[in-house]
Length: 131
Image 1 (cartoon, one colour):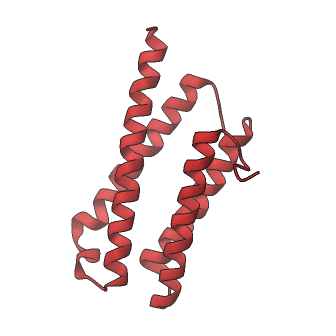
Image 2 (cartoon, one colour):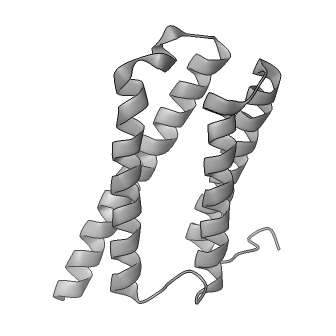
């Protein structure tokens, strides 16, 4: 195995672990939001997602640079980036900024759909995986 292949596999492994932690943490925090649990306001709950998201972003940039594929050059990565931005905005509305519980619940469901879109695009390398 070439050094670049090994580095890519390490970057991909870190990225996949961070993705798993991201969605697991988001579902947990969304559940706490829906049940109005005080755990949603605990210090680790507010800090750890940012640490993981930093690892997620850095591993994505690392893997993309090793592959030589970049958003706004490769269509599927551009779609993935816009799906990620939708997930971030909807997730923020769900966990922090939605003015009512109903709006937060809808934003939570929409964020999960955005996340599913991003994963599907990543797996298929197709910006329109439904077609």
